Image (cartoon, rainbow, N blue to C red):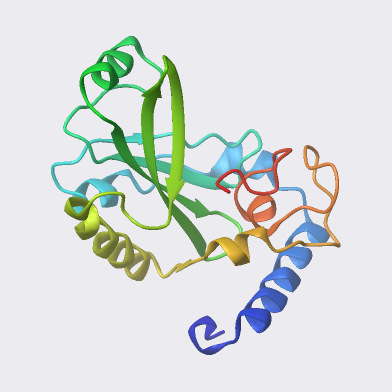
Length: 192
């Protein structure tokens, strides 16, 4: 399937049919826990994003994807830690790049994340584009990584598309492409 030369509607229609077939045939939670190495992409990420630390947040409870977060800021602190809050009190923001790689089909998504401390509260915003010019090289690396693993990056419009013939445990209603390929949650798309 040459997804690059299709219209957005054709892409969505083909993708939705693919997802419906996956869910019609099997429940996969057990298979993911039992047979998938959650660290499968760690070495490749380290080789591509040289001198960057990353967190492997892969968890197959309600996820059907690898979840890798690359730290773009000059500090390596765990998310939600006291060290992160101290960093944010001194700096304007903490920047990260999250890549989710589906286990069900050759699709991935990426988000640039910006954490800020606003009036003492941790605020998260996300974007398809790097927040700072100095991080534009990371986008080139993301595309290189996608080429190496043979996956296609999905955009927000596609990720929000509804898949009507699939029922998920947490999504109360018609799930989105994001819910089906990446994360079953009560939100159809958490990055809006």
